[in-house]
Every structure is written in structure tokens, then in C-alpha cells.
Length: 140
Ligand SMILES: [Zn+2]
Ligand SMILES: [Zn+2]
Image 1 (cartoon, rainbow, N blue to C red):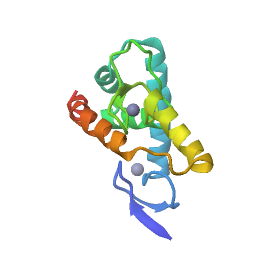
Image 2: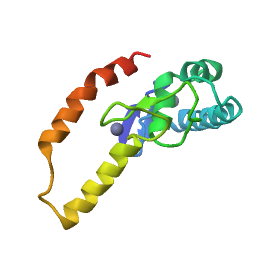
Image 3: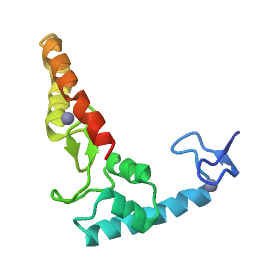
Image 4: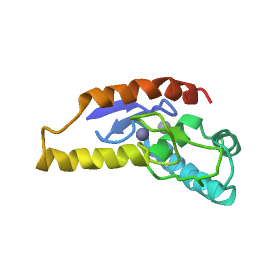
């Protein structure tokens, strides 16, 4: 048995070995919060991430996590976004921007059909170019 402290309320609970280390009470509370936030975002299409967090009393980091999990998505013109994990471009949902997503997809396909046609030199250049931008966006 794997007993842990709930990350949210600190109570001891029996950790099932997968998912977030929070107790079932907090998990269902979080789930309710999620539906509340999703409803809020649907009604306030232009709400910023800070506003959504404050109005729903949810930490910004939690909202970002839902975005990463692609459970939450925002309108293209909304003042909201997270950074692409690869290049730092502002995105509305998921972990990567469209470009990186299709690059990853073709990388995966390439691994099967043409394994040695990568260009590491170019990739390195790209990631240093956008690092500063990613850090800047992080502070918003
Ligand atoms: Zn808890
Ligand atoms: Zn990207």
C-alpha cells in the first residue's frame, strides 16, 4: 500500500499509483472546478487566464495543466495561452504548436521510413532563437 499526503489538503490517503497525488475528495472537487472553469470559458470567450483563475478560484498553474491536457481550449482571440513546449510559441491548447506537432508527427513517420534524414544543426538553431521568447511569455 502506498500511503501519501494529498498534495491539495495534506490528508493521508491511499495512492493508487497513477495520476495526481491527491485524495479522492480533492480529486472530485477538482473535477467540479474543471467543469465550472470550462463553463466560464465558454461564456467568456475573451477572458484572460488570470481572470479565469481569479473568478473561479483556481490556480493559474492548474488551468495551464488543463490546457496542456487539452481539456480546456480557448478562442483564438482570447487573451490566454501557454507556451509550446518545444519552441515557446503561444498556443491555446495542448503541449505543442501546430508546426511542432506536424514536425513531431513527421519525425515519428520518418523514424519508420527514413531514419537517418534528420538535420540536428537546424533544430538547434531554432530552439536557441526562441528560448528568450519562451521565458518572456512565462512571466505574463
Ligand atoms: Zn485532499
Ligand atoms: Zn512549437
